[in-house]
Image 1 (tube, rainbow, N blue to C red):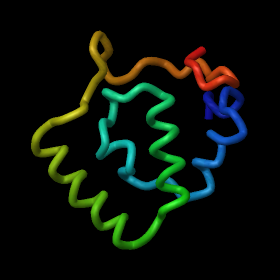
Image 2 (cartoon, rainbow, N blue to C red; image 1 turned 45 degrees about the vertical axis):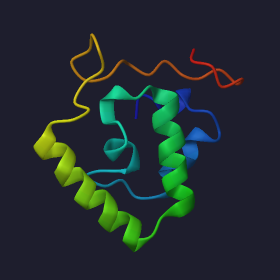
Image 3 (spheres, rainbow, N blue to C red; image 1 turned 120 degrees about the vertical axis):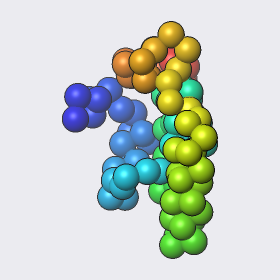
Image 4 (cartoon, rainbow, N blue to C red; image 1 turned 180 degrees about the horizontal axis):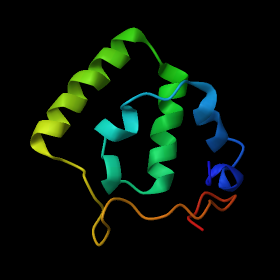
Length: 92
């Protein structure tokens, strides 16, 4: 909730789908990704959602958990705090 005022109009579209226990960004880098990459993956999921994609995400999640991949960014316990995005796509 604390990030909502920081989203661009496009980023807020990630809330067009119900949240789940995992997601496309989580199986494609998880916490090793920067915020801009996470938003891009979340939006890709919004545009491409399907039962088969959900099944793929679930299976890839199990793999990531067992391999312990993507748990944290370098120098962070998990991920850096989101500070918003600039309108030109650069990190704020």
